[in-house]
Image (spheres, one colour):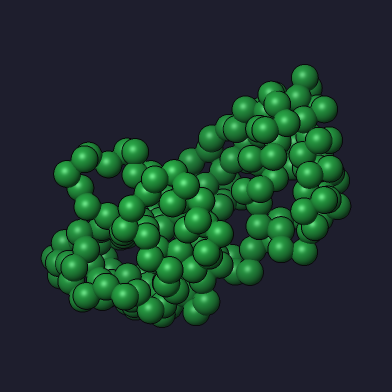
Length: 196
């Protein structure tokens, strides 16, 4: 994400996972903080934007995280979040999803699931307004073992062993001539910290 920012933009990367922060450091990312989303070590009204990518469903309690996000945003600040979504989905997607679940021996399961209406209510309770939601669909090319490993590693599978994940990636890679793309549906949300 940092590569999409103009050079003059300052940012902080926050993650609770030391492994994720280590990966970010290996990519030469700066300004990394190990912190929980419910206790951000940032001053109030200090950020113009907060971006949460695929983390909301892992944070508990989510209301505290939204309150904390609202606290650190300055007036007019923007909160952008991306989370997994079941929509849009096409019939072929179910076949691909079934193949992935079979190869893993498990279904990805998030600790929390949120409807659009529930997220809207939680954000408004924290003080946000002008909340906008949209669903988007992307595809991940599946051509190599590395592509398959990237897909498997991106899934939330805390009970699946590393060895099982690798075998699943190998099985998926062997299907690359049939399954060339894996559909990914996400929900994008934008909320404003504004009194207008």
